[in-house]
Image (cartoon, rainbow, N blue to C red; front, side):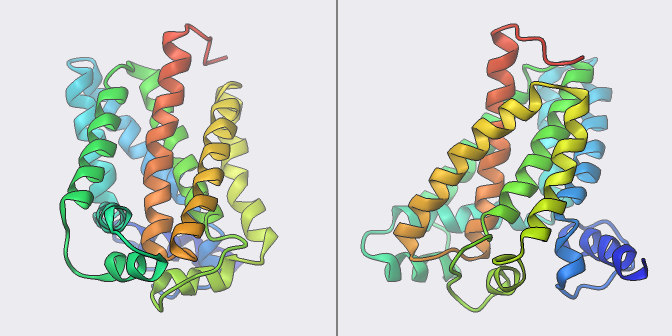
Amino acid sequence: MNKILNGFISAISFFTVIPFKGSYEINYYTVLFISAVGIITGAIAGIIFYLISNYSSLIAAAFSISFILLIYGFNHLDALADFGDSLMARGNAEKRQQVIKDRYTGSGGFGLVFVIYLMSVALLSYFHGYYGFLAIIYAEVSSRFIMVFSLYKTKAFGSGLGKTFTSIISDNKIIIIINFLPVLIISIFDVYYILAFFIVFLIMHLLKRQIINLYDGINGDIAGSLGEIGRFLMYFMLFIFLILKIKLML
């Protein structure tokens, strides 16, 4: 039990800037709770949205997305920028691997960051009150699971954190199952959420396969980027459901 509790606390400490006194060591118990961290960060961001949306949904969306970026220490924003740069690189997989690992950010990185987060704010601003609160939690948990799954049955390149995570996750079905539990748990609030999730999951799985072909593997920046893109696509799917007037809550 202590190992499990310590793993949960360590996951919060490692993946967020929340000042928990957990270990920063990456181990089996830490990665069990990556999706669970999404419930916490999503709930806080959702509360921010709920409180501000009574005055302006656009401002609420901007504050919520800003909080999400901040709570993760801007690590995933940095990953997305590196990924965007490497996507624009000409050449083979080795060239893209070199670009994603360098210290510079070019127009491809700025462009992808701008599109993903600007569109996320725009989509989220269409939601109101309680639905916006739930949508943020749904998207955050989905984002974390997609990030975990991107490292399952995957070849890692480089020598960074991505390789460490892949060595733990890649052949371990238990980690995937436990990280999927938060997805199932929050679906009790919205029977259509699970449909939106599986549509996004299918898209992201196909994208992952293409990325592996382009890069000859996946690293931590790519895994983080897939999580960010997955969050954006969840907002998009929930937005589509909303404008089609599909009942989204029980």
